[in-house]
Image (tube, rainbow, N blue to C red; front, side, top):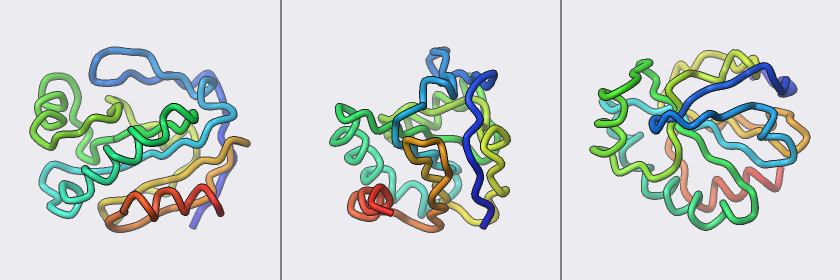
Length: 138
């Protein structure tokens, strides 16, 4: 597994609502980058766990972002987010290059970045609220 250190700015992305998201705003936060696809049944099955994890931890500064594996943007991406019931932010661009993520070869896949900006985990396969919380203890 390739583990790197987050390089803040100049990396900037946009979520499905056209809100700007910057890597520099991720400093001092736990960040979860969740790769999913609409055709991936396992991805769909774990959405409730990610929604619950995000709702339970966002006030503590934990950030969760979805990224569509197929590179969808705009209306197609917004429709998929609604169909899948995703309530955490979903990015239109892939932040993986900023963090030197290895390409996802199995879905779902989640990268965990600690508050120091280091990629500390690559979670492959379906996750639960408990497994996501445990990743912050590593």
